[in-house]
Image (cartoon, rainbow, N blue to C red; front, side, top):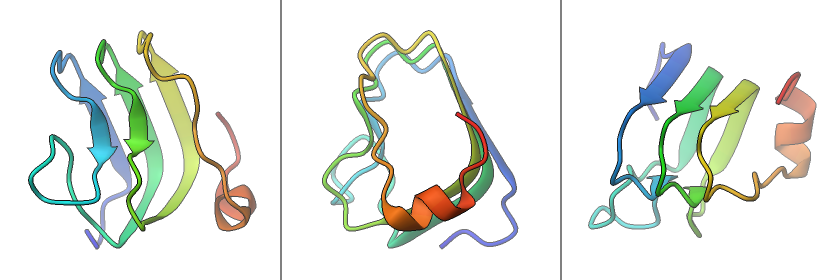
Length: 87
């Protein structure tokens, strides 16, 4: 896990398809726990998933998505429901 990271802003990455991937060979990053207070995704035209089949705990308070036309769903499990304040 990346510690002490409060905000993650990913902007203008035309090739990225997912943020957290199940293996290190993908276009994302592999973590078992992904906890960031604020996640902002902007102009990611190929982004399809935040976590693509990864066995990853996603914990955010705020998620902001702008101009990511292929992102159709954000997986919200019971743990994320407890921490998430705004989408």
